[in-house]
Amino acid sequence: MGYKITSEPFFIGASVTMTAADAFTQATISAPLDSLNREGLLIHAVYFTATQPERIVNANSSVSIQLTSTSKTALVQANDANLIAKRESIVLGGAAEFSGPHIEDFIGQEGPFEKMDNLGIVATHDLFLSMDSVNQVSAKSGQVRVVCSRIRMDADTYAALVTNELSS
Image 1 (cartoon, one colour):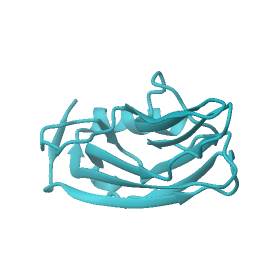
Image 2 (cartoon, rainbow, N blue to C red):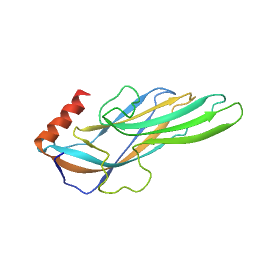
Image 3 (tube, rainbow, N blue to C red):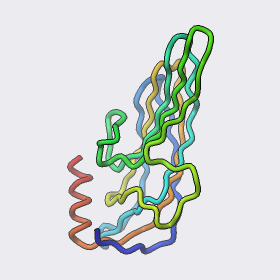
Image 4 (cartoon, rainbow, N blue to C red):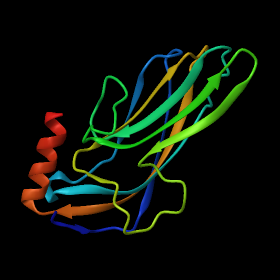
């Protein structure tokens, strides 16, 4: 890929609150980019926090949060090319005992980021923060902190990324 980093790393933060329990909810994060100069974002790290799942007797429950480069209508899996990072928190419920929460991260990051880390490149103006849950009584909320740098791409790279993001 042909790009040049044009800024020091900076942070973008956002939050999302589900509209109801177990209802997929998405928030748009605006990232104003200069499309005339083929500007994009190089994602170095993604850090999530979210409400923990409730402990439901005799049921497994979970709360999931994800960051994507395109709008989605449901949570996506690892094979989705526009998934930047995802976290799932799971509680396994028995008759009187519970296990968890168990945290599963897909691409996200716990430790400090390195400037050379590259989770993905975003070429369009928006990122999308989404949440969903399973077997919850109340709506949940979550937050994200994205560490990124501005980049300038060559024409071929920019065209390929924009086409991919707009056609997904």
